[in-house]
Image 1 (spheres, chains in turn red, brown):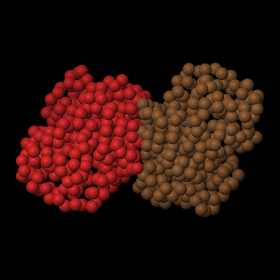
Image 2 (cartoon, rainbow over the protein chains, first blue to last red):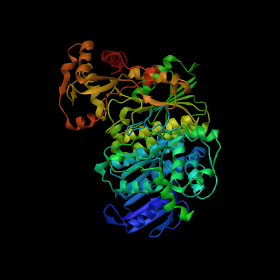
Image 3 (cartoon, helix red, strand yellow):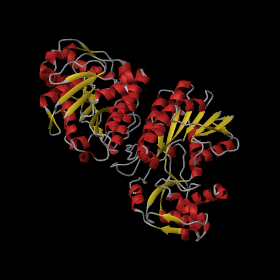
Image 4 (cartoon, each protein chain N blue to C red):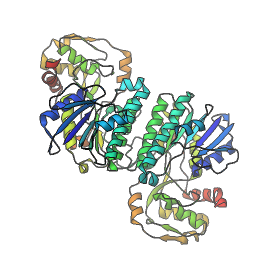
Length: 318
Length: 318
C-alpha cells in the first residue's frame, strides 16, 4: 500500500501524514511507502518521505505518481483569496492541476483511490438554506468554481473506472495551528490560537456571527475513514459535505474559556472590519450533510474538543 | 452588432442563423455581421457569412472571434454518445473548447455576451425528482459532466466581468429535421419525422415512455429572448433550464395524428430495444424550471405545435 499526499506541506497534509504514519495501514494493507509532496519541500514527518511536486505541471505530477501508487490524497490548492486575486494561478493549479492528477491516474490504468478535498465554498448565490446533500453548487468565487469543477471530474473519472475517487467539501477548519493567513476566515482560528498562546488577536465580526467548523484532528480522521470506503458505498456521486457543526463566535470563545480559563478571552480585541464582514456574511453555515454522516463521518462533539485538540496536538509546537 | 454562432452548422445553429438574419437586430442594435462557424463549412444561410472554426484549437477560436464581436452563441459540442465513446474528444471539444472561447473573450477585454447551450444531461444519479432550479447537477455521462463544467466556467467568467454569459439546459429537441443520429434520443424525432415523410421508423420504447421535449423553433426563440436580458436580470447564477414539456410517446403520436391524419402513425414499428431503454430510462423528465419561465422563456403550448413547426419549417427541405 503506497500512499501519496499532494499538498503534504499544508496543515491537513502534515497532520494526515502523521496520522497515517502512526496508523501504519490503510484499506486492509500495511503502508509500505508514504510520500508527502508539495510545491516546496514539506516539513519532515517521521515514517514518510518528502518530495516536491507542482500539480500545475503534468511532468511533475507524472514523476510524483509512480505506477505502484495505491492511494492519492489531492489536497494541493491555492486558497480562496489567492485564486480570486490571481485568476490564472487558480485555473492552472486548482483546475488544471486536478486534471493533471486525474489524467496521470488514467494513463497508469491502475484505478488508484483518489481522495479530493473540496470546500463548502462551492455553495452560494440565491440557493435557499439549509444546504443539503442535493443542493445546487453555485460558487461565488473562482476558488469555489474550481473546486466544483474538480468534483465533477472526480465523479466522471470514477464513473469511467479511471480512478476510485471520493471528495469532501470541508467546512472551515479550526483551530488551525501556525500563523494567520490571507484567507478571510483566518480570524476563525486566530481569535483562539493567539490568545491560547498569550497573544492578542483581532475579531472582525460580532459575537453573534454563526459559522460551521471542524477540528483538524477530526478532519483527518474523516479523510482516513472515507479512504476505507468501497465504490458500492458511494453511489452515483462521489463527492459530499464533510460534517461540521455550527457555532457562534460567542460560543467558541465560551468553549475556550471552559477549557483554558478566563485569561485568553481577554486578549481578543473586537474591531469590526467591514471588508471581512462583507465576505464572510455571504458564506453558508447551515449545512446538513446526511450522506457522509450515514457513511460514518463525524463532526466534533463540542467546540471544547476543538480547543483541547489544539492544545494536545499543536500548542507544544507553537 | 456583430454576432457569431459557434456550432452554426448544427440544427439549432442553422435555425438560429436564419432567425437572426430575418430579425436583423439584437439587443437594440442592427445586426451588421452574422457569422456561422463550424468545424466543417456550415450550410449557407441568407444574410450570414460562414467560416470554419475548431473550438478545440485556441488559435482557430481567436481567428473566429475578432475583437468587434458583440454576441457569441456557443452551441458547438460533440453529442453524448460520441463524448461517451471518445473521452478525449469530449474533453478537448466540450470542456477545453468552451474554455478556449471564454479565454479568447477574456483576452479581448470587451465583455461580449456569450450564450452557452448546456443540456438536461447535467442531471442524474440519486437526486430526487422533480428537478427544480436549485437541484444538484449530478451528470452520469461525460457529456453531461463537460456541460456542467461549462456552466461553472460561464458563471465565473461572468462574475469576473470577462463575459456577459448566460446558459440554457436544453431539453430534448423534437421534431429535429434531417437524419437519425447516434444519440439514444434519436428516435424521439425519427418516430415522427420519418412517418411524416412517408417512411417507416422504429420505436424502441413503449407508448407510456415519458420525456421532456421542446421544438427547434421555440428553442431558437428562447435563445434569442435570453440574449436580450441584462446582467441584473440574471442574478447570481447565469445558467438555467430552458422550459420544455413532458409528454408520453402515445401523446406525441396522437399529436401527429391530430395534425397529419392517421397514416403516419401506421408507419411506426414497435420494436423494444433493451439497450436504448436502459439509457433513456435513466434520463430525467420531471423538470420544473421557474427562473427561465419568470424571465419569459416558454415551452411549446402543445405537441401539435411541434408537429406543425416541423411541417412548416423543415418538411419542404426534407
